[in-house]
Length: 584
Image (cartoon, rainbow, N blue to C red):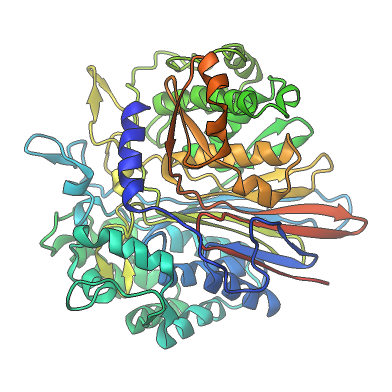
Protein backbone atom coordinates (compact mmCIF):
# COMPACT_ATOMS: atom_id res chain seq x y z
CA UNK A 1 0.00 0.00 0.00
CA UNK A 2 2.99 2.35 0.13
CA UNK A 3 2.74 3.70 -3.40
CA UNK A 4 -1.04 4.07 -3.16
CA UNK A 5 -0.94 6.09 0.06
CA UNK A 6 1.79 8.38 -1.18
CA UNK A 7 -0.15 9.16 -4.33
CA UNK A 8 -3.44 9.41 -2.47
CA UNK A 9 -2.18 11.99 -0.01
CA UNK A 10 -0.57 13.99 -2.83
CA UNK A 11 -3.97 14.37 -4.43
CA UNK A 12 -5.78 14.79 -1.10
CA UNK A 13 -3.44 17.59 -0.14
CA UNK A 14 -4.58 19.51 -3.20
CA UNK A 15 -8.28 18.95 -2.58
CA UNK A 16 -8.78 18.90 1.18
CA UNK A 17 -12.09 18.87 2.98
CA UNK A 18 -13.31 21.05 5.78
CA UNK A 19 -16.60 21.76 7.48
CA UNK A 20 -18.92 24.64 6.68
CA UNK A 21 -21.58 25.63 9.19
CA UNK A 22 -24.82 24.01 8.01
CA UNK A 23 -27.58 26.26 6.73
CA UNK A 24 -30.44 24.37 8.30
CA UNK A 25 -31.62 24.30 11.89
CA UNK A 26 -31.95 20.55 11.52
CA UNK A 27 -28.32 20.08 10.58
CA UNK A 28 -26.17 17.84 12.72
CA UNK A 29 -23.01 19.01 14.43
CA UNK A 30 -20.35 17.15 16.33
CA UNK A 31 -22.35 17.82 19.51
CA UNK A 32 -24.93 15.18 18.65
CA UNK A 33 -27.04 13.52 15.99
CA UNK A 34 -30.28 14.85 14.50
CA UNK A 35 -33.44 13.14 15.75
CA UNK A 36 -36.65 12.44 13.82
CA UNK A 37 -39.39 9.82 13.88
CA UNK A 38 -40.95 9.88 10.39
CA UNK A 39 -38.32 10.24 7.68
CA UNK A 40 -34.81 11.57 7.17
CA UNK A 41 -32.25 12.57 4.55
CA UNK A 42 -28.53 13.01 5.17
CA UNK A 43 -26.53 14.34 2.22
CA UNK A 44 -23.32 16.23 1.49
CA UNK A 45 -24.99 19.60 0.87
CA UNK A 46 -27.95 21.41 2.39
CA UNK A 47 -29.53 22.02 -1.02
CA UNK A 48 -29.57 18.28 -1.74
CA UNK A 49 -30.92 17.45 1.72
CA UNK A 50 -33.71 19.99 1.28
CA UNK A 51 -34.56 18.58 -2.19
CA UNK A 52 -34.79 15.05 -0.80
CA UNK A 53 -37.04 16.24 2.03
CA UNK A 54 -39.25 18.14 -0.43
CA UNK A 55 -39.86 14.91 -2.34
CA UNK A 56 -40.47 12.90 0.85
CA UNK A 57 -43.02 15.48 2.01
CA UNK A 58 -44.84 15.20 -1.32
CA UNK A 59 -45.38 11.48 -0.74
CA UNK A 60 -42.29 10.21 -2.48
CA UNK A 61 -40.28 7.32 -1.15
CA UNK A 62 -36.56 6.87 -0.56
CA UNK A 63 -35.78 6.11 -4.23
CA UNK A 64 -37.71 9.18 -5.38
CA UNK A 65 -35.80 11.31 -2.90
CA UNK A 66 -32.49 9.78 -4.03
CA UNK A 67 -33.11 10.84 -7.63
CA UNK A 68 -33.86 14.42 -6.51
CA UNK A 69 -30.81 14.51 -4.24
CA UNK A 70 -28.47 13.29 -7.00
CA UNK A 71 -29.73 15.86 -9.49
CA UNK A 72 -29.03 18.65 -6.99
CA UNK A 73 -25.64 17.30 -5.93
CA UNK A 74 -24.55 17.30 -9.57
CA UNK A 75 -25.20 21.05 -9.58
CA UNK A 76 -23.97 22.22 -6.16
CA UNK A 77 -21.20 19.65 -5.54
CA UNK A 78 -20.03 19.09 -9.15
CA UNK A 79 -16.51 18.13 -8.08
CA UNK A 80 -17.90 14.90 -6.65
CA UNK A 81 -20.79 13.39 -8.61
CA UNK A 82 -23.44 13.96 -11.23
CA UNK A 83 -25.22 12.93 -14.42
CA UNK A 84 -21.86 12.19 -16.05
CA UNK A 85 -20.71 9.75 -13.37
CA UNK A 86 -21.50 6.40 -11.76
CA UNK A 87 -22.91 5.06 -8.51
CA UNK A 88 -23.77 2.10 -6.30
CA UNK A 89 -27.05 1.97 -4.37
CA UNK A 90 -28.43 -0.27 -1.66
CA UNK A 91 -32.22 -0.24 -1.44
CA UNK A 92 -34.09 -1.59 1.59
CA UNK A 93 -37.70 -2.48 0.81
CA UNK A 94 -39.55 -2.44 4.12
CA UNK A 95 -42.12 -5.20 4.71
CA UNK A 96 -45.71 -4.05 4.27
CA UNK A 97 -47.17 -6.64 6.61
CA UNK A 98 -46.20 -8.39 9.85
CA UNK A 99 -43.94 -11.44 9.55
CA UNK A 100 -42.93 -10.51 6.00
CA UNK A 101 -39.18 -10.43 5.50
CA UNK A 102 -37.66 -7.19 4.19
CA UNK A 103 -35.68 -7.20 0.95
CA UNK A 104 -32.38 -5.49 0.14
CA UNK A 105 -31.44 -4.96 -3.49
CA UNK A 106 -28.02 -3.83 -4.66
CA UNK A 107 -28.06 -1.57 -7.74
CA UNK A 108 -24.90 -1.00 -9.76
CA UNK A 109 -24.33 1.91 -12.13
CA UNK A 110 -20.55 1.70 -12.46
CA UNK A 111 -18.91 3.32 -15.47
CA UNK A 112 -17.49 1.02 -18.15
CA UNK A 113 -14.52 1.24 -20.52
CA UNK A 114 -15.11 1.70 -24.27
CA UNK A 115 -15.01 -1.52 -26.30
CA UNK A 116 -11.92 -0.24 -28.12
CA UNK A 117 -9.94 0.32 -24.90
CA UNK A 118 -6.93 -1.90 -24.24
CA UNK A 119 -4.29 -2.42 -21.55
CA UNK A 120 -2.15 0.43 -22.95
CA UNK A 121 -4.93 3.03 -22.68
CA UNK A 122 -2.93 5.15 -20.26
CA UNK A 123 0.49 4.70 -21.81
CA UNK A 124 2.50 7.78 -22.70
CA UNK A 125 5.67 7.30 -24.77
CA UNK A 126 5.47 3.55 -24.33
CA UNK A 127 4.99 3.45 -20.55
CA UNK A 128 2.22 4.20 -18.02
CA UNK A 129 1.63 7.93 -17.75
CA UNK A 130 0.86 9.95 -14.64
CA UNK A 131 -2.64 10.84 -13.50
CA UNK A 132 -2.09 14.45 -14.53
CA UNK A 133 -1.05 13.36 -18.03
CA UNK A 134 -4.04 11.15 -18.76
CA UNK A 135 -6.69 11.85 -16.11
CA UNK A 136 -7.94 15.11 -17.59
CA UNK A 137 -9.66 14.98 -20.97
CA UNK A 138 -11.43 12.32 -23.01
CA UNK A 139 -9.12 9.35 -22.51
CA UNK A 140 -10.30 8.67 -18.97
CA UNK A 141 -14.05 9.02 -19.65
CA UNK A 142 -16.11 5.86 -19.18
CA UNK A 143 -19.76 5.38 -20.08
CA UNK A 144 -21.64 7.05 -17.21
CA UNK A 145 -23.94 4.73 -15.30
CA UNK A 146 -25.61 6.63 -12.45
CA UNK A 147 -28.65 7.72 -14.45
CA UNK A 148 -29.46 4.28 -15.87
CA UNK A 149 -29.12 2.86 -12.37
CA UNK A 150 -31.47 5.47 -10.92
CA UNK A 151 -33.96 4.93 -13.73
CA UNK A 152 -33.92 1.16 -13.05
CA UNK A 153 -34.42 1.65 -9.31
CA UNK A 154 -37.21 4.17 -9.90
CA UNK A 155 -38.98 1.82 -12.30
CA UNK A 156 -38.80 -0.92 -9.67
CA UNK A 157 -39.78 1.13 -6.62
CA UNK A 158 -40.57 4.80 -7.30
CA UNK A 159 -43.92 6.29 -6.31
CA UNK A 160 -43.88 9.79 -7.81
CA UNK A 161 -43.68 10.63 -11.50
CA UNK A 162 -40.10 10.61 -12.82
CA UNK A 163 -40.45 14.17 -14.11
CA UNK A 164 -41.46 15.52 -10.71
CA UNK A 165 -38.16 14.42 -9.18
CA UNK A 166 -36.15 16.84 -11.32
CA UNK A 167 -38.03 20.00 -10.39
CA UNK A 168 -35.95 21.03 -7.33
CA UNK A 169 -32.71 20.83 -9.33
CA UNK A 170 -34.21 22.57 -12.38
CA UNK A 171 -35.37 25.52 -10.27
CA UNK A 172 -32.01 25.73 -8.53
CA UNK A 173 -30.09 25.62 -11.81
CA UNK A 174 -32.24 28.37 -13.30
CA UNK A 175 -32.38 30.62 -10.25
CA UNK A 176 -28.85 29.95 -9.04
CA UNK A 177 -27.24 28.43 -5.97
CA UNK A 178 -24.84 30.04 -3.53
CA UNK A 179 -21.28 28.80 -4.02
CA UNK A 180 -20.11 27.28 -0.76
CA UNK A 181 -16.78 27.95 0.89
CA UNK A 182 -15.77 24.36 0.26
CA UNK A 183 -16.50 24.52 -3.48
CA UNK A 184 -14.67 27.83 -3.75
CA UNK A 185 -11.61 26.50 -1.94
CA UNK A 186 -11.48 23.37 -4.09
CA UNK A 187 -11.65 25.53 -7.21
CA UNK A 188 -8.87 27.68 -5.76
CA UNK A 189 -6.67 24.64 -5.18
CA UNK A 190 -7.53 23.32 -8.61
CA UNK A 191 -6.94 26.50 -10.61
CA UNK A 192 -3.43 25.52 -11.75
CA UNK A 193 -4.83 22.25 -13.12
CA UNK A 194 -7.89 23.73 -14.82
CA UNK A 195 -7.75 22.85 -18.53
CA UNK A 196 -11.25 22.33 -19.94
CA UNK A 197 -12.55 25.41 -21.79
CA UNK A 198 -16.20 25.10 -20.71
CA UNK A 199 -15.08 24.10 -17.24
CA UNK A 200 -12.98 27.25 -16.83
CA UNK A 201 -15.65 29.51 -18.30
CA UNK A 202 -18.25 28.22 -15.85
CA UNK A 203 -16.24 28.01 -12.63
CA UNK A 204 -13.71 30.87 -13.10
CA UNK A 205 -13.93 34.50 -14.15
CA UNK A 206 -12.10 36.05 -17.11
CA UNK A 207 -9.00 36.56 -14.97
CA UNK A 208 -8.90 32.92 -13.89
CA UNK A 209 -10.22 33.53 -10.37
CA UNK A 210 -12.64 30.92 -8.98
CA UNK A 211 -16.21 31.90 -8.23
CA UNK A 212 -16.11 33.28 -4.68
CA UNK A 213 -18.00 31.84 -1.73
CA UNK A 214 -21.42 33.49 -1.67
CA UNK A 215 -21.53 33.93 -5.47
CA UNK A 216 -24.92 33.11 -7.05
CA UNK A 217 -24.03 30.61 -9.78
CA UNK A 218 -26.63 29.72 -12.40
CA UNK A 219 -26.50 26.83 -14.86
CA UNK A 220 -29.25 27.21 -17.50
CA UNK A 221 -27.64 24.54 -19.69
CA UNK A 222 -27.94 22.00 -16.88
CA UNK A 223 -31.56 23.04 -16.37
CA UNK A 224 -32.27 22.22 -20.03
CA UNK A 225 -30.54 18.86 -19.68
CA UNK A 226 -32.68 17.99 -16.67
CA UNK A 227 -35.85 19.06 -18.48
CA UNK A 228 -34.96 16.75 -21.36
CA UNK A 229 -34.28 13.76 -19.10
CA UNK A 230 -37.37 14.53 -17.02
CA UNK A 231 -39.54 14.50 -20.15
CA UNK A 232 -37.97 11.62 -22.09
CA UNK A 233 -36.20 9.50 -19.50
CA UNK A 234 -32.54 8.54 -19.85
CA UNK A 235 -32.72 7.73 -23.59
CA UNK A 236 -31.28 11.13 -24.66
CA UNK A 237 -28.27 10.46 -22.43
CA UNK A 238 -27.49 7.06 -23.90
CA UNK A 239 -28.65 7.12 -27.51
CA UNK A 240 -29.95 10.61 -28.28
CA UNK A 241 -28.84 14.21 -28.28
CA UNK A 242 -26.79 14.15 -25.08
CA UNK A 243 -25.07 10.87 -25.98
CA UNK A 244 -23.87 12.36 -29.26
CA UNK A 245 -22.60 15.45 -27.45
CA UNK A 246 -20.72 13.29 -24.93
CA UNK A 247 -19.01 11.29 -27.67
CA UNK A 248 -18.17 14.48 -29.55
CA UNK A 249 -16.69 16.08 -26.40
CA UNK A 250 -14.52 13.02 -25.74
CA UNK A 251 -13.11 13.00 -29.27
CA UNK A 252 -12.90 16.70 -30.11
CA UNK A 253 -10.84 18.16 -27.30
CA UNK A 254 -7.33 19.60 -27.19
CA UNK A 255 -6.85 17.48 -24.06
CA UNK A 256 -6.07 13.74 -24.39
CA UNK A 257 -8.78 12.26 -26.61
CA UNK A 258 -10.83 9.20 -25.74
CA UNK A 259 -12.24 6.12 -27.44
CA UNK A 260 -15.88 6.33 -26.36
CA UNK A 261 -18.41 5.66 -29.17
CA UNK A 262 -22.14 6.02 -29.54
CA UNK A 263 -22.41 2.21 -29.54
CA UNK A 264 -20.66 2.16 -26.14
CA UNK A 265 -23.26 4.57 -24.85
CA UNK A 266 -26.21 2.65 -26.36
CA UNK A 267 -25.05 -0.70 -25.05
CA UNK A 268 -24.57 0.34 -21.43
CA UNK A 269 -26.62 -1.63 -18.88
CA UNK A 270 -27.12 -1.02 -15.17
CA UNK A 271 -27.46 -4.10 -12.96
CA UNK A 272 -29.21 -5.25 -9.83
CA UNK A 273 -28.23 -8.15 -7.61
CA UNK A 274 -28.74 -9.53 -4.15
CA UNK A 275 -26.31 -7.86 -1.74
CA UNK A 276 -23.35 -9.43 -0.03
CA UNK A 277 -24.18 -10.02 3.64
CA UNK A 278 -22.19 -11.31 6.61
CA UNK A 279 -23.15 -11.91 10.27
CA UNK A 280 -21.39 -9.61 12.72
CA UNK A 281 -22.17 -10.50 16.34
CA UNK A 282 -25.97 -10.15 16.58
CA UNK A 283 -26.07 -7.99 13.45
CA UNK A 284 -26.12 -8.67 9.72
CA UNK A 285 -24.06 -6.29 7.56
CA UNK A 286 -24.88 -5.97 3.85
CA UNK A 287 -22.98 -4.25 1.04
CA UNK A 288 -22.75 -4.19 -2.75
CA UNK A 289 -21.24 -6.84 -5.00
CA UNK A 290 -18.29 -6.47 -7.34
CA UNK A 291 -17.24 -4.47 -9.36
CA UNK A 292 -16.93 -2.47 -6.17
CA UNK A 293 -14.49 -3.92 -3.69
CA UNK A 294 -16.15 -1.91 -0.93
CA UNK A 295 -18.74 -4.51 -0.01
CA UNK A 296 -16.33 -7.45 0.00
CA UNK A 297 -13.54 -5.66 1.85
CA UNK A 298 -15.67 -4.00 4.52
CA UNK A 299 -17.27 -7.38 5.22
CA UNK A 300 -13.90 -9.16 5.29
CA UNK A 301 -12.57 -6.57 7.74
CA UNK A 302 -15.56 -7.07 10.03
CA UNK A 303 -15.35 -10.83 9.60
CA UNK A 304 -11.75 -10.77 10.84
CA UNK A 305 -12.66 -8.49 13.75
CA UNK A 306 -15.54 -10.77 14.72
CA UNK A 307 -12.88 -13.27 15.81
CA UNK A 308 -11.07 -10.76 18.06
CA UNK A 309 -12.02 -9.51 21.51
CA UNK A 310 -12.80 -5.87 20.79
CA UNK A 311 -14.73 -5.56 24.03
CA UNK A 312 -11.53 -6.15 25.99
CA UNK A 313 -9.85 -3.11 24.41
CA UNK A 314 -12.88 -0.81 24.38
CA UNK A 315 -11.27 1.52 26.93
CA UNK A 316 -7.76 1.33 25.47
CA UNK A 317 -7.67 3.64 22.42
CA UNK A 318 -4.27 2.50 21.15
CA UNK A 319 -5.11 -1.22 21.30
CA UNK A 320 -8.55 -0.52 19.84
CA UNK A 321 -7.08 1.29 16.84
CA UNK A 322 -4.35 -1.33 16.50
CA UNK A 323 -6.77 -4.25 16.11
CA UNK A 324 -8.96 -2.50 13.56
CA UNK A 325 -6.02 -1.21 11.54
CA UNK A 326 -4.42 -4.69 11.44
CA UNK A 327 -7.69 -6.22 10.22
CA UNK A 328 -7.95 -3.54 7.54
CA UNK A 329 -4.34 -4.21 6.54
CA UNK A 330 -5.09 -7.88 5.90
CA UNK A 331 -8.35 -7.19 4.07
CA UNK A 332 -6.71 -4.60 1.81
CA UNK A 333 -3.96 -7.10 0.93
CA UNK A 334 -6.62 -9.52 -0.30
CA UNK A 335 -8.49 -6.75 -2.08
CA UNK A 336 -5.42 -5.63 -4.01
CA UNK A 337 -4.63 -9.16 -5.14
CA UNK A 338 -7.94 -10.85 -5.84
CA UNK A 339 -10.64 -8.39 -6.87
CA UNK A 340 -11.74 -7.06 -10.24
CA UNK A 341 -14.74 -6.87 -12.57
CA UNK A 342 -16.49 -10.25 -12.12
CA UNK A 343 -17.20 -10.45 -15.85
CA UNK A 344 -13.44 -10.62 -16.44
CA UNK A 345 -11.96 -11.95 -13.18
CA UNK A 346 -13.18 -14.98 -11.24
CA UNK A 347 -12.64 -13.35 -7.88
CA UNK A 348 -12.91 -15.67 -4.83
CA UNK A 349 -15.50 -13.56 -3.04
CA UNK A 350 -17.12 -16.38 -1.07
CA UNK A 351 -13.69 -17.73 -0.14
CA UNK A 352 -12.64 -14.34 1.25
CA UNK A 353 -15.76 -14.34 3.43
CA UNK A 354 -15.50 -17.98 4.47
CA UNK A 355 -15.71 -18.23 8.29
CA UNK A 356 -12.70 -20.56 8.56
CA UNK A 357 -10.62 -18.30 6.34
CA UNK A 358 -11.59 -15.25 8.38
CA UNK A 359 -10.59 -17.03 11.61
CA UNK A 360 -7.24 -17.90 10.07
CA UNK A 361 -6.67 -14.27 9.02
CA UNK A 362 -7.57 -13.09 12.53
CA UNK A 363 -4.92 -15.43 14.01
CA UNK A 364 -2.26 -13.36 12.21
CA UNK A 365 -3.08 -10.37 14.42
CA UNK A 366 -1.10 -9.94 17.61
CA UNK A 367 -2.37 -7.51 20.23
CA UNK A 368 1.18 -6.47 21.06
CA UNK A 369 2.91 -6.23 17.67
CA UNK A 370 2.27 -5.01 14.16
CA UNK A 371 2.29 -6.88 10.86
CA UNK A 372 5.23 -5.37 8.98
CA UNK A 373 3.87 -6.38 5.58
CA UNK A 374 0.43 -7.87 5.05
CA UNK A 375 0.39 -10.60 2.42
CA UNK A 376 -2.73 -11.85 0.64
CA UNK A 377 -4.09 -15.09 2.02
CA UNK A 378 -5.19 -18.25 0.25
CA UNK A 379 -8.99 -18.47 0.41
CA UNK A 380 -10.49 -21.96 0.04
CA UNK A 381 -11.97 -21.58 -3.43
CA UNK A 382 -8.88 -20.24 -5.14
CA UNK A 383 -7.09 -22.45 -7.69
CA UNK A 384 -4.25 -21.49 -10.02
CA UNK A 385 -4.50 -17.75 -9.39
CA UNK A 386 -2.13 -16.03 -11.80
CA UNK A 387 -2.57 -12.30 -11.26
CA UNK A 388 -0.29 -9.64 -9.83
CA UNK A 389 -1.28 -7.35 -6.94
CA UNK A 390 -2.81 -4.01 -7.93
CA UNK A 391 -2.61 -0.62 -6.25
CA UNK A 392 -4.42 1.65 -8.70
CA UNK A 393 -5.43 5.04 -7.34
CA UNK A 394 -8.99 6.21 -6.80
CA UNK A 395 -10.02 9.84 -6.57
CA UNK A 396 -11.38 10.97 -3.20
CA UNK A 397 -13.98 13.27 -4.79
CA UNK A 398 -17.14 11.22 -4.39
CA UNK A 399 -20.35 11.75 -2.42
CA UNK A 400 -22.64 9.66 -0.25
CA UNK A 401 -26.16 10.08 1.05
CA UNK A 402 -28.51 8.06 3.23
CA UNK A 403 -32.31 8.38 3.14
CA UNK A 404 -35.27 6.67 4.80
CA UNK A 405 -38.95 7.41 4.15
CA UNK A 406 -42.16 7.30 6.17
CA UNK A 407 -42.78 3.64 5.29
CA UNK A 408 -39.35 2.51 6.43
CA UNK A 409 -37.83 2.05 2.97
CA UNK A 410 -34.25 3.26 2.71
CA UNK A 411 -31.43 4.11 0.31
CA UNK A 412 -27.69 4.10 0.89
CA UNK A 413 -26.03 5.52 -2.24
CA UNK A 414 -22.43 6.39 -3.06
CA UNK A 415 -21.93 8.38 -6.24
CA UNK A 416 -18.90 9.76 -8.10
CA UNK A 417 -17.25 11.41 -11.09
CA UNK A 418 -13.85 10.10 -9.83
CA UNK A 419 -11.10 12.74 -9.48
CA UNK A 420 -12.01 16.26 -8.43
CA UNK A 421 -14.18 17.68 -11.22
CA UNK A 422 -13.80 14.48 -13.22
CA UNK A 423 -12.34 14.84 -16.71
CA UNK A 424 -13.09 18.60 -16.79
CA UNK A 425 -15.09 18.01 -19.97
CA UNK A 426 -18.57 19.50 -19.71
CA UNK A 427 -21.65 18.55 -21.72
CA UNK A 428 -25.14 19.86 -21.11
CA UNK A 429 -23.98 21.75 -18.03
CA UNK A 430 -22.58 18.68 -16.25
CA UNK A 431 -19.10 17.21 -15.85
CA UNK A 432 -18.02 13.95 -17.46
CA UNK A 433 -16.24 11.41 -15.26
CA UNK A 434 -12.61 10.36 -15.46
CA UNK A 435 -13.49 7.04 -13.87
CA UNK A 436 -11.26 4.90 -16.06
CA UNK A 437 -8.32 6.09 -13.96
CA UNK A 438 -9.56 3.59 -11.36
CA UNK A 439 -7.97 0.92 -13.58
CA UNK A 440 -4.35 0.01 -13.03
CA UNK A 441 -2.25 2.03 -15.47
CA UNK A 442 0.29 -0.79 -15.58
CA UNK A 443 -1.37 -3.96 -17.00
CA UNK A 444 1.46 -6.37 -16.15
CA UNK A 445 3.69 -6.66 -13.08
CA UNK A 446 6.46 -9.22 -12.62
CA UNK A 447 5.29 -10.99 -15.76
CA UNK A 448 1.73 -11.46 -14.51
CA UNK A 449 -1.44 -9.63 -15.61
CA UNK A 450 -3.10 -7.26 -13.15
CA UNK A 451 -6.72 -8.22 -12.44
CA UNK A 452 -7.78 -4.56 -12.61
CA UNK A 453 -6.03 -3.79 -15.92
CA UNK A 454 -7.88 -1.92 -18.67
CA UNK A 455 -9.95 -4.06 -21.03
CA UNK A 456 -12.71 -3.11 -23.44
CA UNK A 457 -16.18 -3.26 -21.90
CA UNK A 458 -14.78 -3.73 -18.39
CA UNK A 459 -15.74 -1.93 -15.17
CA UNK A 460 -12.84 -0.47 -13.18
CA UNK A 461 -12.64 -1.75 -9.63
CA UNK A 462 -14.25 0.61 -7.13
CA UNK A 463 -14.09 1.01 -3.35
CA UNK A 464 -17.55 2.53 -2.90
CA UNK A 465 -19.28 0.89 0.05
CA UNK A 466 -22.90 1.91 0.61
CA UNK A 467 -23.80 -0.31 3.54
CA UNK A 468 -26.82 -1.40 5.57
CA UNK A 469 -26.88 -3.13 8.95
CA UNK A 470 -29.78 -5.27 10.15
CA UNK A 471 -30.48 -6.03 13.80
CA UNK A 472 -31.27 -9.40 15.38
CA UNK A 473 -34.94 -9.04 14.45
CA UNK A 474 -34.07 -8.44 10.77
CA UNK A 475 -34.95 -4.76 11.11
CA UNK A 476 -32.87 -2.06 9.43
CA UNK A 477 -30.57 -0.47 12.02
CA UNK A 478 -27.88 1.46 10.16
CA UNK A 479 -27.58 3.18 6.75
CA UNK A 480 -24.05 4.38 6.03
CA UNK A 481 -21.37 5.09 3.41
CA UNK A 482 -18.68 7.60 2.50
CA UNK A 483 -16.58 9.10 -0.29
CA UNK A 484 -12.79 8.90 -0.12
CA UNK A 485 -11.37 6.64 -2.84
CA UNK A 486 -9.72 3.51 -1.46
CA UNK A 487 -9.98 4.84 2.06
CA UNK A 488 -13.79 4.53 1.85
CA UNK A 489 -13.39 0.96 3.10
CA UNK A 490 -11.54 2.10 6.23
CA UNK A 491 -13.94 4.98 6.91
CA UNK A 492 -17.04 2.78 6.72
CA UNK A 493 -15.57 -0.14 8.67
CA UNK A 494 -14.26 2.14 11.44
CA UNK A 495 -17.60 3.88 11.81
CA UNK A 496 -19.51 0.59 11.92
CA UNK A 497 -17.19 -0.75 14.63
CA UNK A 498 -17.60 2.48 16.59
CA UNK A 499 -21.36 2.20 16.43
CA UNK A 500 -21.87 -1.54 16.93
CA UNK A 501 -18.94 -2.53 19.15
CA UNK A 502 -18.34 0.60 21.20
CA UNK A 503 -21.88 1.92 21.44
CA UNK A 504 -21.09 5.39 20.10
CA UNK A 505 -24.03 7.41 18.82
CA UNK A 506 -24.00 7.83 15.07
CA UNK A 507 -22.59 11.36 15.21
CA UNK A 508 -19.70 10.17 17.35
CA UNK A 509 -19.10 7.28 14.97
CA UNK A 510 -18.84 9.42 11.82
CA UNK A 511 -16.81 12.13 13.58
CA UNK A 512 -14.23 9.78 15.11
CA UNK A 513 -10.61 10.13 13.91
CA UNK A 514 -9.56 8.04 10.91
CA UNK A 515 -6.49 5.89 10.48
CA UNK A 516 -5.04 3.46 7.95
CA UNK A 517 -1.96 1.25 8.15
CA UNK A 518 0.86 1.51 5.62
CA UNK A 519 3.16 -1.37 6.47
CA UNK A 520 4.59 -0.65 9.93
CA UNK A 521 3.40 2.97 9.73
CA UNK A 522 -0.04 3.90 11.00
CA UNK A 523 -1.25 7.02 9.21
CA UNK A 524 -3.59 8.79 11.65
CA UNK A 525 -5.80 11.79 11.11
CA UNK A 526 -3.94 15.03 11.61
CA UNK A 527 -4.55 16.62 15.00
CA UNK A 528 -6.45 13.60 16.34
CA UNK A 529 -6.06 12.19 19.83
CA UNK A 530 -4.68 8.93 18.41
CA UNK A 531 -1.26 10.56 18.11
CA UNK A 532 -1.17 11.02 21.89
CA UNK A 533 -0.55 7.29 22.30
CA UNK A 534 2.73 7.27 20.41
CA UNK A 535 4.58 5.40 23.18
CA UNK A 536 2.06 2.55 23.11
CA UNK A 537 2.27 2.27 19.33
CA UNK A 538 6.06 2.36 19.45
CA UNK A 539 6.01 -0.55 21.88
CA UNK A 540 3.95 -2.50 19.31
CA UNK A 541 6.49 -1.75 16.57
CA UNK A 542 4.24 0.82 14.92
CA UNK A 543 5.42 4.18 13.61
CA UNK A 544 2.93 7.06 13.52
CA UNK A 545 2.41 9.55 10.72
CA UNK A 546 -0.27 12.27 10.53
CA UNK A 547 -2.28 13.26 7.45
CA UNK A 548 -5.61 14.84 6.58
CA UNK A 549 -8.45 12.51 5.61
CA UNK A 550 -11.22 13.49 3.19
CA UNK A 551 -14.17 11.39 4.36
CA UNK A 552 -17.82 12.31 4.00
CA UNK A 553 -19.68 9.78 6.13
CA UNK A 554 -23.43 10.40 6.09
CA UNK A 555 -25.44 7.93 8.11
CA UNK A 556 -28.76 7.18 9.75
CA UNK A 557 -29.12 5.00 12.84
CA UNK A 558 -32.57 3.55 13.52
CA UNK A 559 -33.86 2.57 16.94
CA UNK A 560 -37.23 0.92 17.50
CA UNK A 561 -39.50 2.24 20.22
CA UNK A 562 -42.63 0.10 20.35
CA UNK A 563 -44.38 0.19 16.98
CA UNK A 564 -42.46 3.29 15.83
CA UNK A 565 -38.91 4.24 14.90
CA UNK A 566 -36.50 6.84 16.14
CA UNK A 567 -34.09 8.08 13.46
CA UNK A 568 -30.69 9.56 14.25
CA UNK A 569 -28.74 11.35 11.55
CA UNK A 570 -24.95 11.68 11.61
CA UNK A 571 -23.04 14.16 9.42
CA UNK A 572 -19.31 14.07 8.78
CA UNK A 573 -17.86 17.36 10.13
CA UNK A 574 -15.08 17.22 7.52
CA UNK A 575 -17.50 18.29 4.78
CA UNK A 576 -20.55 20.51 4.54
CA UNK A 577 -23.38 17.99 4.77
CA UNK A 578 -26.65 18.27 6.65
CA UNK A 579 -29.28 15.97 8.12
CA UNK A 580 -32.98 16.78 8.15
CA UNK A 581 -35.98 14.79 9.26
CA UNK A 582 -39.66 15.10 10.12
CA UNK A 583 -41.60 13.79 13.08
CA UNK A 584 -44.87 11.90 13.07
